[in-house]
Structures are given as C-alpha cells and as structure tokens.
Image (spheres, helix red, strand yellow):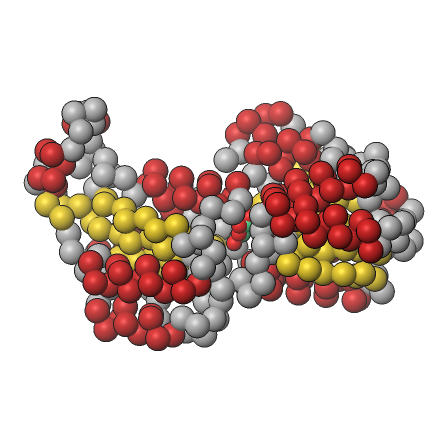
Length: 336
Ligand code: AHR
C-alpha cells in the first residue's frame, strides 16, 4: 500500500528535503525485499544497490529483510510483506525450489514479485527475473581453464571444487557448467563440497582438502570470492602455493573489488563476474508495471571475465566469443 509522502515530514532533520527528487504530493512505493543474507562481498554490493535505488529520495519505502541463509525465514519474510500489503516484493531466492505456494499467495494478494539474482525453478508466478546465467559462468571457467592449460603446456587437470550454498541456482549452474567442460576433457574432479559462499566455510573445506588430497591437486575452483579468500588462507597455512606463480591454479566467481585485487596481484588466476547491480533494472520493471506495460520476463546482467596474465585474448562460451580482461588498478577502482 502506498504511503503518503507526508511521513517524510516526520523524518530526521538530518534529511535534507531539498535533495528529494520526489514531489511532496507523491506517494512512496512500498517494496519488500527478502534478501538471501550477508554471506559475501557480492551480497553486500547487491543490498547496497537496492538501498541506493529504492531510497525515500527516489520515492520508495524499502522494507528490507536479511534472511541469513534460512529458507524458512525467507518464506516468512515474503508472507510478512503480503500482510503489510506492500506494493512490490523482491526476492533473491536462497534455494531454487519450494516457491510455488507462497508465490501463489502473492498472486492472490495482487502483489507483483520480481526475482533477482538466483532463479526459481518450480514456479513462474513472478513478473520478472533479473540476474545472471550461472551455467554460462561455470562453462566460462571451464573454457578458460582449457585454453589456459593448453597455453601453459599443462596436460593433466586434478581439480578441487568449493561449491556455493547447495540448492541455490548459483551453485547448481556453476557446478554443472564447469563439470560439463571437465567431463568433455577428461579432467579429474577430486572432490566438490559445499562452502556456503562464505569465507569461514571456504577455509574449513580447503583445510580438509589440503589434508585429504595433499600433493594431488593442481586446480582449485571456488564458487565465489569469499570462499577463495578462505581457501587462500588454508593453502598458505598448508604450504601450498597458488596463483600465477604457484603450483595450484585458483579460479573464482563474482569479481567484486577484493577479488579483483587478488587477480591483479596474481593470487587468483581468473575471476568470472557475477554482476550484483540489478536494482536499476528492477526499477525499470516496476516502472513498466506501473505504466500497465508487460516487462521482459528475463533480464540478463552484463558480465566480464577477468584474468591476471595477458596470454589469451578471449574464450568462446556456448558458441559466443567473449573477451578476457586483464585487471588493472583502474578496473579495481571502478568495481563495486
Ligand atoms: O547468488 C549469487 C551468489 O551468492 C554470489 O556468487 C555469492 O557471492 C553470493 O553469496
């Protein structure tokens, strides 16, 4: 339910009214956002993107719930938004299944749902989805490794994978994509365990890998940057060298600022971007709905593949050639 902008009058004096871009007679559009949690740098950037776009200054009242990676809490948050009679609901689904009942409830309440980032696989009762193709990201990591190993004369690949939160579409897509290339090329995936997309779990998994597979692996694939940070700590402690000058090729996903810094320093060999800045595209969806138009059901984010070494200019993923970008300080400074 739209809130009269009059509530703004009661807001802190610190809020400079002249900075408001909305008219005093306008109403705030109330948006409920059920966010996954706060497990990674990527997540922080995603949350900030929504808070920046859906601000009071821009005419929104953002009701934000951090679901802390708890699927039941996320369903409860959506039901809470229905009770509040918000105007729109944004969901970044922790896992890809178990959604049809609550999305039916949103539909019956007449509240359009916009899904961001991860996908929902068991229901299409949402107005639009804005996010990334995770399988393409996994395929890209595999295609890059294939071309890189050839360029470096590496004939055998023995990989360890640290997966993201099991059941999330990001984990499912990246795992499938990389495995497809691994299988096609006869690589060995020694192990593939859940690292929960966070640094502490990534470190724990890598500590156990270093003990179980000592001297047996030459590639580590972390399904996000924070897991890679944890894996680096674990490998350092175990005396395993990694990165462009090391014995282990380290691959990551996300390419947030800190991840790109490690690509630039050569600690991470390649980082496959997952763009968290979906909110402006979500706002376009909302504007279309407000105008009575039908938005595109799927909107894909633009993403780049980042590397340290200037030895390959591009890779071909799913038939499409995409450039590889060598990370510079300028690129790091411009990243989220
Ligand atoms: O769903 C996107 C993934 O979730 C990002 O790769 C990861 O960092 C986040 O936590």
